[in-house]
Image: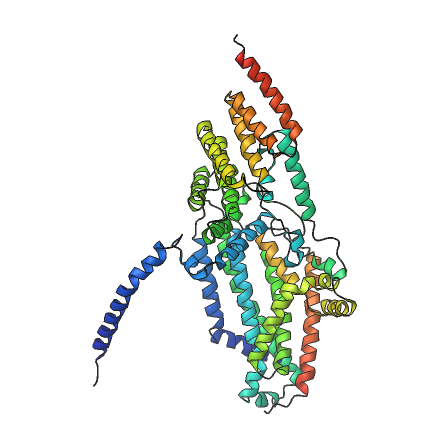
Length: 301
Length: 260
C-alpha cells in the first residue's frame, strides 16, 4: 500500500496531538507539585544546591575582582558572606556604635589575613606568571557591586533556600544601587521560600528603617525576627548569637530614638543575658545611660 | 619560505571551506547576544558576566578550531595519499611540518580576529567604550598560546595512531595545564621527596598555558595593562615551546613510514 505524503503528515499531526494531550497534565503537575516551576530545578534535582553554591562563590569572585583562592587554597576561602556586606565602610548601614565598629574592624582584619593566600613566589616561573594573574585583594566599589547581581540571581533561582544570597543581593541593591523596590521584592521572594528566616526579616527591617525611614514597619519586622530567632535558636546548645545581637541592638536603637527607653533597656539586657555581644562593657554603659534617661523621663517637669 | 606559505594557504582555505568555524562563531554569537538581553533587577550597566561568558566561549571555540584543524593535517594527507605528490614537488618533510603549523596558526589568527571583533562590538555597545590595548594584548597572547597548542597537536599527529586519540589526549593535556599547571610546585611541597621531585620537574617542563588564560580574567575584571616587555617575554616563551614541539615533530616525521 502506498501512502501519500499528505496522509503521512496528517497521521503524524494526529499522533502529535494525542501525545500532547496526554503529556500536558503531567507537564502541569511538574510545575505545580514543586517549589518552583523552573525547568532547571526539575532537571537538576538536589544537584542544583551545589550549582547554587558555585554561583554564590562566583559572585564572591566578582566581588574580589577575580582575586580568589583556587581549589588548592580552599583553607583560605571565605567561610561566610559577611565580608560581602561589611566592607563598605561607615555608610554600610551597620550601627555606628563602638561595639559594632570594633567587631567589624576585627572581621575585616581577619578577612584581609585570610585572603593573603598567595604568599611570596616560590621560583622565577611563578614570579613571572603572576604578572598575568590578578594578585591584589580589592573589593568592588563605586556602584560596580552591580556586577555580582547576575550570579546572585542565578544562585537564588537554583536554590531558593540559600538565605545569604537574598541578604547580600538586597544589601547592595538598596545600599549603593538605589534599587530599594527591587531589594524589597527580592527579600519578599526569599521570605516566601523561607518564611521562618530571621536573617531575611532582619534585612527587611533594615530596608524599612534605613531606606523607607519607616520606624513602625521596621519595629514590626524586627520583632518578628526576634520571635523567629527565639523559636529556632533559643533551644539550641550553640545558637547564632551574632544574629541575635544584630536584631536586638538595632531594635534597641530604634526604641531609644522613639523614646521607649524601658523597651530599649530590656532588649540590651536580653543581648547581655545571652552573652551575644563581643563587647558587653559597651552595652552595659549604654544600659546605664538609658536608665538615666528613663529616670529623667519619669520625673515630671 | 614560499613553499611554507603555499602549504599554509591550503590550510587556511580548508578552514573557510569547512563549517567548524561558522558553527562555533554562530553558537558564540547567539549565546552572547541572548545573555545580553537578560535584565537583572532592572539594573543597567551589568557587563562583566557577559564579557566572562563571551571570552570563555571564544577560548573554547579557538581551542576546538586549533586542536581539530591541526590534528587532521598530516593524517589526512597520509590517508588520502596526497602526501606523496606533495613530497615529490620537492617539498621537504620539515617544510611540510612548518607549512602545516603556519597554516593552522594563521587560520586560528583569522578566527580569533573575527571573534575579538565581535567581542569588541558587544562590549563597546554595553560599556560605551573600548579598551583597545587590553583587547589587543588578550588576543595576541591567546594567539601565542594557540601556537603552542597547535605545535603540540602536530607532534601528537605523528605520534598517535588516530586523530581522535590525538584530539582527546591534547584536550586533556591542555585542560590539565590550565587547571593544575600553576599549582604543581605548591602540590610538590606537600609530597614525599620522590613525588615532589617528579612534580617539580613536570612544573618546569610543561608550557604554562594558564598564564595566557590569566589575561582573559584580567580583561573581564578591568585590570590594568600588562607590561609590553612582559608580553614580549611571554611571546618568546611560547615561541621557545613551539620550536621544541616542531623540532620533535620533524624528528619523528622524517623517520616515519608514510604507508600504512
